[in-house]
Image (tube, rainbow, N blue to C red):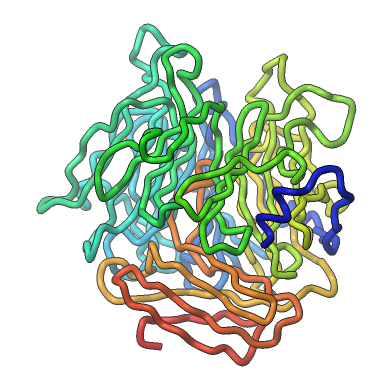
Length: 496
């Protein structure tokens, strides 16, 4: 019903959602920049993971040419900083590589990538060679992972940007991407071609309900026929128009995936240079581009006098007021000094109204930073059910914001655990049912821009005081649990 309403919206006045409020807490973390030359025009991600097992997300911030930064979360927005002596880092994604129940980090770099194995208490060791991972020698800018049926270890995709050794570069020199599949001795590495310089990748169910690898690409458009790509994981082939996949061209930067229409299928938001696109998943397995009138495009700065097109990077859905509707944060910023694009380009916080339209609120909420933003994370850093925000900026200090919105709705945080190699149930689908309706989210590794999260799925519940959680587990089981109390973190297993 929401999708039908959204499709019909024209010039109607949007139904404005409750206004969120954020407090700038950047003084609670050390000054940290994502810096470097043109190899670090892209990247600059944030990884959020609970590496000291205190129930609160810790943060890993990419540093570019300088060192990266690990922030150990002590609660109440207090962090213990730890410099990570890895340079040339573009981003990082948390996942459990070896099935021991402790989260690891796959670190993307300009040069050999690194797998940091978690040892507990936020200690890590370089386990790239021990796990048999080919680190590559490329300029890595995208990552995603998934578990094949009953596999002990994940399959990994590494997206590489420009081939720095190609004398024709940079405009005709996108590097090959890398696919790593579990083998008897570590991982077997193979090239995935053609490569169109991906800046984001996500393995998740598409509108057909099949596990698909989505690539959002930045280069080769208009010079070599490049486009956005979808690769069917089970069939090991790229989709085309014959599959209902219509090739899209946009200078892709980031991917955000979530069902926002209530049909149980994940819709996809794509950030870009000069354009942002929302693709609504249809019941026939295809995608429809959302109408401009929904208010999601964020194609130019919404404040100030710079009318040039925007450049979007990290995007993430999240219910920032817990009213039961997913809102959208978009990190913005010029690549560096590109004259045709906005230089003063504040970040967006788009609130979804009850009518499906989006309303800009970043300036009112206090998060409209005009710096050159890159990676970000909407994540509950204090355990109070409010989604806080951290943003990494290029050549400007990282920002930390605490969600201090009053009169919030109820909420649930859902964590999944299962036996075997896929301990964190990557690929599971979670449905939360309340009197307001149903919400869906999928547990995945990837998306965003150069950084992701491993932790609870956050659901805003509005006024609902009880809920039913239905989990479709990766092994085919389905579990259903009634939750009497809300405003809590719930840990579920297949037999819970």
